[in-house]
Image (cartoon, rainbow, N blue to C red; front, side, top):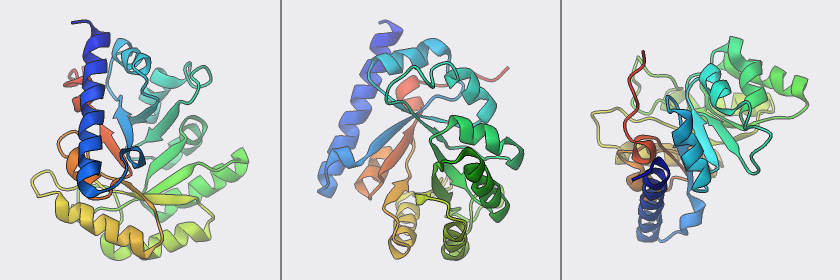
Length: 226
């Protein structure tokens, strides 16, 4: 099987699973956007995903994303890039220049830097607030108790907050975390929810996700970093 056939088949299976989950929830499958996580992937596998019609991609690191996407940024019609990893304030300008969506707005200092970068660019990027639903010390994101205030502060800076994002604890049932994120979004009038990864994207789609982030389910296991 060629790389192109493998990736196309994986994408088809993931899309079918999303559609089935949405059907179980009684909602249209096209309300769920598949974000293909292309971090650490060789170029041929990214090219295969593009050839199979995938146009929405997520990356964790600004520098690696530049390697993958700088040349494709202006030559691929319909391409949409999401930053789904932590963003350092010294990388804000580069991130804003490359990405369409920043999914990991998680602290006041970053929000302020983004607001200034958007002013300098003359165009804002869509933003998600990352919520640390498990309140894990090692993980980025505002706590659930702080989320309402932080969302309000971001709106005060005129950041275009579109939705919320979370990464549940690895060893916990995911459904309560997805339900919590949805509850916070609803009371703040936010329609978009980025939740669910390769192991649990179908659950997320069934529980109201509008974006799911799938890497391994599309590309297979990542090669170890050298």
